[in-house]
Length: 314
Image: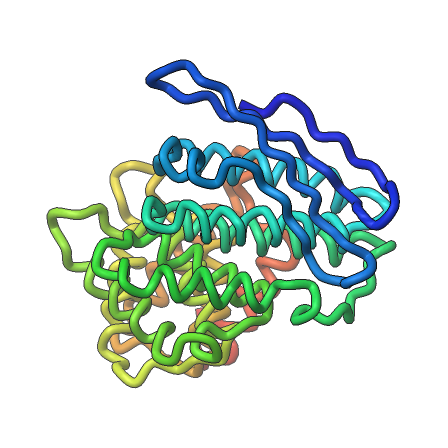
């Protein structure tokens, strides 16, 4: 449970947050003080009390809650006057969490850390007071991403489709290629998603997961050697456009991003009927009674550009 977070600037320490976690079994309460930025050393500093206790009390559900709390606090700082310092605090607290509670972390926790980092970094760069060319290595971003991916690698057999797409989408948003830090990571994640497409037991990829996944590959300029797997993904996406449950069908921005990614990768679907099916779906969305379901101008432009690039006349 989060009690309070008091941003302050005193001496060398900036952005202090007070975290209280309650033990579910014996009702004990522990308090942790995170002092995240040391000006003199120009890198994250974090002070945590009772590390052994935190190892004993944390479990994956508490980790997920803690990550959300840290992201919420960092987002408040990111929208303020010193977004980079808020990011430093987030890096420090999440890195410390990974080092202390490492054995208890599951892939959902690690995916959440990478996704939260990407969302915060995007918000920080959108802040006019944030220098867009800030050195991501000094800010701790590269180190955090590397350590998280390394912890994630042994868990790949268990990851689900949403985690795969979130990890690659976040990496692309951060401008960090996973293969730079963990060679072969992108192909390993892609292979897992392709495997889940035909898995009748586990949850298959959603339309949004497919779109985010392919958008990430295109943004990272990562071409798949196995074109057949990309065709299988296209077939799955096409099937979702006709799903009896409207909530399972691709949203307008998802369809636009999916086609933009195909065109950027230079991949023409083996089944030409797929393009027609997605075009029909997109046309229905343009006429949707709910204006929020319709594509925006950027989405429509991306979709048309993709059709032209793929040489499809619709």
